[in-house]
Image 1 (tube, rainbow, N blue to C red):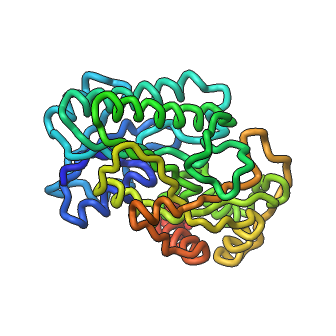
Image 2 (cartoon, rainbow, N blue to C red):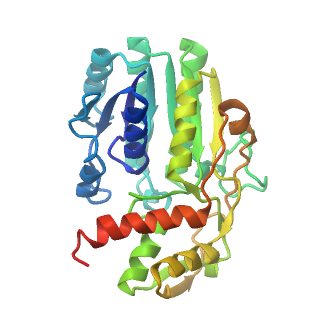
Length: 321
């Protein structure tokens, strides 16, 4: 297949690009290298695929509708994997304009380019954060999700809704994948797994919400990528599908696993959870199993061990530790 991957230099996007190239697909990558975190990390994420004969990369911003149209019309991808976004639940608070601009307008630009160029299939990276403080446990896709807790999940819910109009009006297959607490090698520095490892290594304290009495459905990046590829292969009309592990972990236990891997005590400062943070996220993955053949395979202990190996190899060595 010929696949356009937006956010190709990001955490999940770079893993997806590598997996698609290993399969023999032709990949068109797009990323704007914004400074939400160090752009050098994103450059490094693409180091393994730079120069690959089946990989074409564009330094581009999805808010630039003209450039997006040009890329899509030139390459005529079979499917678009739209992972580019302004991420971060807490960072989005007070920045609703930026998140609306990137995550809503940017998504519309890509959908319009797909419509105009005859692309028939669009896979959209959404988030488990759209569920907010739901009382339906585990989280199921039929939940209305009408009460997001921050601009980031609100912008992702908007993307899901806009996607439905393109299916309804233009027969553009649209699958929204709600990712649950993704972690692994190349994880973003602002995300909890990286932050805990980094603070443990440096002997710095971490802030642990509610003393670790919160649960997250940590899902290893390779399992997420497998789910994305399955969705790219299966046009389903309009579909919303959870991609998680289906087994939430107490945050206190998650921190303890990291402490054992690093071989150092993790210094903890207990703070109340902010209103943007639900007590639990927990994916019902029965729909993903049925429609995508999705089956997460990586235990949290194994996934964190892989992330720790990556950190030692890429971060500690790079910094001269």
